[in-house]
Length: 210
Image 1: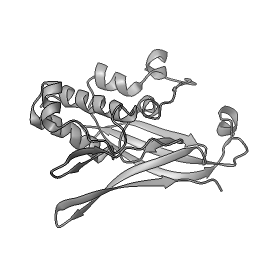
Image 2: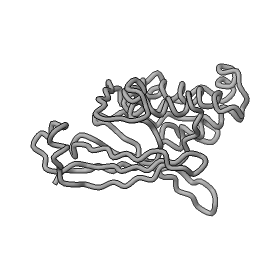
Image 3: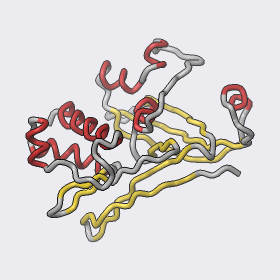
């Protein structure tokens, strides 16, 4: 199955959900209507829907259809379980993203200021697969004080990530630092019983300042 087709459907539906073209608790078009709308196979539609379900955007209900369960939040929400670029996260949160490049090698300033993931996936054809993440709360550093308006805080919420491609090669190490009261970190957990999925639970981890 060509990734470009299901990925296009996934991104289009995701954008319509995030921009409330499909309201919270509203049913999405039927599977048959989605197949007709996108001119694709049933498996392609189901794969796109499965990805949205795994991220907590929708929930399938037997005999009723697929319901939008996504709720926008006032705080910026960064996913823990999924892999998305800063640009993608900002777009999902309806924020204007700006990247200021302090130092770089190999990449051009244009790539670094845009989206490195877009360059790796679309230009180089890299398949990004896995990311290991560690969440901590740490004291502010001199670098934090230099580049971030700390608003009186003496600690930061820190996410350290190691990301791997489909060949098992680590190509990225990042550390993002956030105001404790400003960011919300989300994950989607699925409860399974006797090998069958019983339902999904959307969990949120809110980090509070010391």
